[in-house]
Length: 191
Image (cartoon, rainbow, N blue to C red; front, side):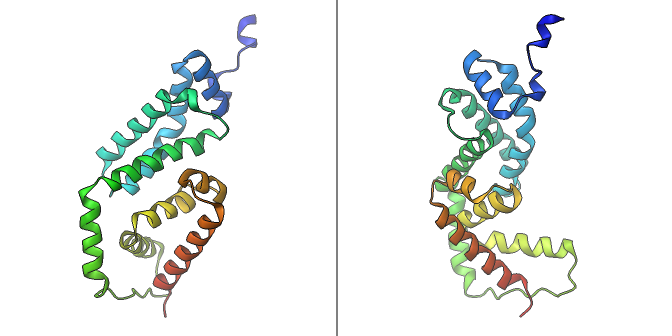
């Protein structure tokens, strides 16, 4: 009984303490606790970014946590959540860069951009209709804009965290967020 007083239960440790414990002792129980805390949210992030493909989102989630485990000794100076989303962001960027679908998406956008008219939203639109319209507008945007939207408004990362994840200056993040929100406002508000 005396021994347990000196050790905190895994559930009461912060993410950063769990990472330190995982790095020092190769403690897979600490890693399991991190997985338990963050896997569902990370899978949701991947699900939204990978065209709602549940199997692919699951694979990406596993891959992200494998990268966390294999690079655990490189974890320094940042919060675990920011580091995890940096890994996730890079996985998505690599997927987009190497994907044939990206080329098809760009061709589709170029072909239909001239034809597409601004969608007008009725003022009394209910939440479901608004969400559908927002999803459609986001699908028309570049993958970078969708990632930025997701990191800020779905994952609720701060501007400094997004800057760290995307490896760009905070001012650039602010500028891109402003442009993104103005574009969405223009497309989703009635004329």
